[in-house]
Amino acid sequence: MKPHRSLLLAAGAVLAVAALALTGCTAAPAPATDPGAATATTAASCVADPAKTASLPATLPSTPVSSTLAAKLVAASESGRAEISSPGAIVAVQTPQGRWMRAFGVADPVTGRAMTVDDVQRIGSVTKTFTGTLILQLVQEGRISLDDTIDRYVDGVPNGAEITLDDLLTMKSGLASYTLNTDLQNEWFADPTEPWTPAQLLHASFALEPIFAPGAKFNYSNTNFILLGEVIQRVTGESYATVLQERILTPLGLTHTAMPAGDAPLPDPHADGSSLQGTADGDTTPVNATEWNPTFAWTAGQMISTIGDMLTWGRVLGTGHDVLDRTTQLDRLESMPAAGGYGDAIGCIDGWIGHTGEIPGYNTSVFYDTTTDTTVIVFANSDIMSGACTESKTLPDNPTSAPCMAPATRVFVAVAEALGHPFAANPAS
View 1 (cartoon, rainbow, N blue to C red):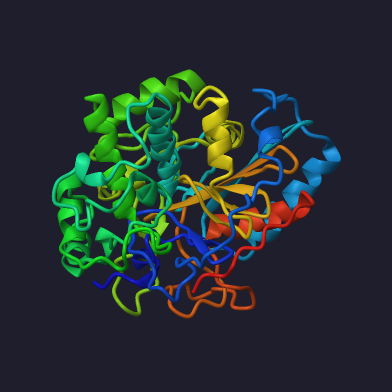
View 2 (cartoon, rainbow, N blue to C red):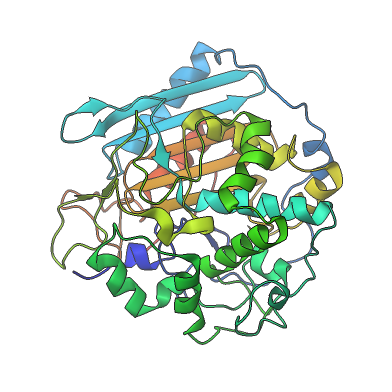
């Protein structure tokens, strides 16, 4: 079996923001010519009014949105779904006027069980937003500084005396993603149920030459967030899962979100994940990746959640409520350049901030519109690209008239259009 390129793109689901890809995890990042390589941008923030966003009320009404808006959201979701290669999807929207959630398709293609809004799935690189938030909490407590170099916490990092925690957080370290290591790729696909340790992932990365000098430019690398996970554990003296639970999940009441053990089955109800990753050349029969071991992604993408929990989390990324103080949240909102780009573990384009996530079998989109105080979440139980893809493997009935895009991204784009604030995602390949 050969890994196909959607895995090798640093986690598959590539959502490009300007010249930036917000990807999931478990795959290798794209070369410099891909959307994953960002160009230099100006210092102004992509968020028009950070102070206003950070001052919004903590909660919004959970009452249903109007029937008119609900009908528009159903139509948009169905329009997006018509061009994706996913058995099912879940879409959720929170506006200042109310909330809407809807499940589409099937959670299990074998039994035909319908997808529900309660289904759990793996959220891939959305995990990075949690890891980044924990780092910012430690910064605001004075326990670490973003100017600290990584060699203070982890030995043996190439250019470790020059790479700052800020470089890691904003994907400017120059470290090659461990997922580019062909030996690691071959071992991963030989048995994707086998566990991985952070040390193994870092060893695979450090065996590769750095891509550029620290701070020189942007390159999406999962290695950055494995290192940040190590920093969190070493500074707190606790496991990442414990710190995550104590500092974010419990305070926010995210009872269906977790950093599960690698061999832990997904809790019920859950969506089964379909993937073409690791299949032989010419084979377009999806495999069930539900129980593939997520430790390959660790603090870059191992978490699980539900659409309801992500609806809460997506808005917290904008407001900072109950996780970051106002000053730190303002710094985070101002960390993203005006032209669109990647800031402190979140990306932005035209006021939409958030992250996408992909891990074999699943694709997630978590975005918050800072211009309208609206959150949009999309889950898809597939990571299979669709559209005019030139390198990513697609299904035989793939519609080629649309740009190449990951499933959750395509549905999100359709929903954003229906909400009146379009999101211009660059196509994947």
